[in-house]
Image (cartoon, rainbow, N blue to C red; front, side):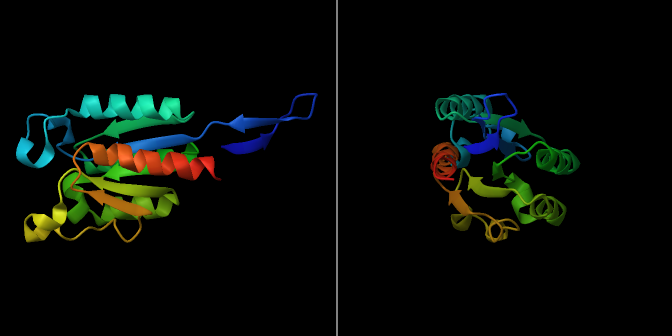
Length: 163
């Protein structure tokens, strides 16, 4: 956790609670019903609940955001920069392979992130093999289903604890 000077009269320090953002790209609102052979049967709401619960247990505030609209995702990344978001977990979904604009927003934010994909994008159609985000990411988790989000979160919680 980051330490800040406390402005109280005792001159002590207070701990600033770390804030994380999980960004979900297009069509992830359909998880649980959309192509379960690739994406599993866990819903986005279930993933988000598990992430929030685990983050709270780790003393971290975690917010989730999903949109099917590229501009909304870009605006959320811009806002994250102003809101002192420490790290992000990003599943750009189909924008992984197409969105230079979202990549530029993430790069411009200066916020470190872990890229997550439910399916193994390297074992799928050739157009899915290219990611505009992987070279910017701290790490990439793919092919482990919804558990990949929790693994990314566990990594970030350990990283925060040692800062």
